Image 1 (cartoon, rainbow, N blue to C red):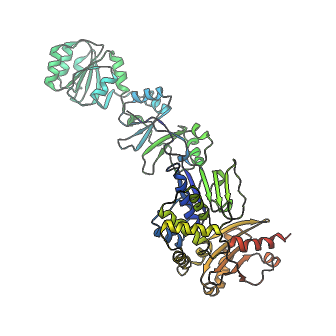
Image 2 (cartoon, helix red, strand yellow):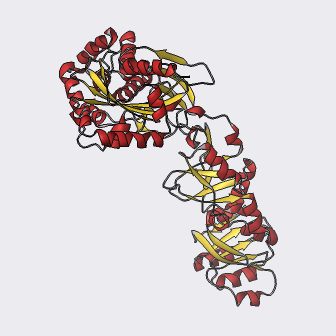
Image 3 (cartoon, rainbow, N blue to C red):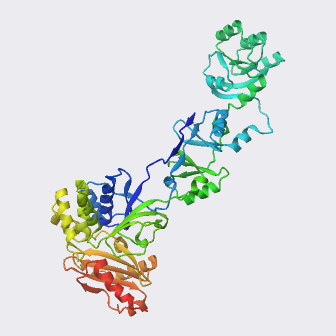
Length: 549
């Protein structure tokens, strides 16, 4: 009958470990590594996630390390799956209306979901629907929808004296007087309610009906029972009078005959705001939660959405709202681990915040394993090693520290990998630009900043030489102007970083007046020794913007 009970959270309360938008290799590898580290204490709780597509280098790394990519998360706005409670009670579609009504009354439920044998949501029985089904001006002839003999006996509080049919279905007649009239209408599928009248009982049996219901607890003689067995029909004896028997039979309609089929539904992935709208627009003031295929998961009401619900996240490799996943303003940030400059992000509660100016966030995560004396799994060591080598260009960047070098040596031993060869292979993968459209290239590795009231984006492209950018400077300038308008920033900048010469050429798009005030007339700008966006170029640009009124 009733499927399931009230249940608390349908799943463990998960925490997403997630990096920045347009994730690079360090972002992806560090979230996988930190999720593994945290799951040592609470297995399965921490989910590595990403907000954006991965570049070719990162896909190569995951393939080499034989690791699945993090789950894609478009938004961390609270959704239905974050609710700690779903009411998963339901009934199957053949359950009689009287049983559904009793369950709703006993559990103080205004609506009861109806499912089929596979758990698919088929409809909803509401208090309104029950009233409408039984309080109507039109009076239809009393009949039985298909119902099992045992179920009917339970509803009528009856004893089965002769049980030849498994299921009964047909019109129901009450024979008190005018027996000849009733006989003229009866068929082999019909059921007759009769009192203490053995001659009438025998005549009805001889008419070949499907079942006889003896009301008022009247005695049933041996001749009647013998005749019923011979005719292969059923007899039930109930203490109810004829009126009460008819009333209870009318309440035996299966749920599928009284349920509403146009009902409000939501998915686990739907936002709570969307769910609130669905529920407030529904006359039932509730919504059924289903999987994409229609499997019923539970029911939520307005009161469930009054709770203060947030997704829990840990941010890695960034600490600015502009670089974070959508919906971060409404999420509960538990921790931030980064190696970049401090940005503008606010939290409702105090959080753990670790910012270490090393070459890669993967370095910070590696030292957490080293500090507790628990090595990462070899595939994870492979990933963390790639994260460090990628972000430091094989330990060549000016951001490289002794901590990065120590982490690389440690991970190389755990993973059994030559870091020099591995690093060179990553650089080659990261600099394969031939098949990438220019706009995609100029948006693949970007960071958004706000400096002294100016909004800017800095993209970085690693190259083995300047041949690529110098042969299409006009197209680069055109694309940068388009991207500046698309992202609504004051400056859109791209650094083509030459890993051989250890310098960069910089292209900018902005208002002519701003570029003039910054004395950036000639472009591209050659910047010797500038390898790092955050350590080498951003401080230079910041000093220039600071001087503006």
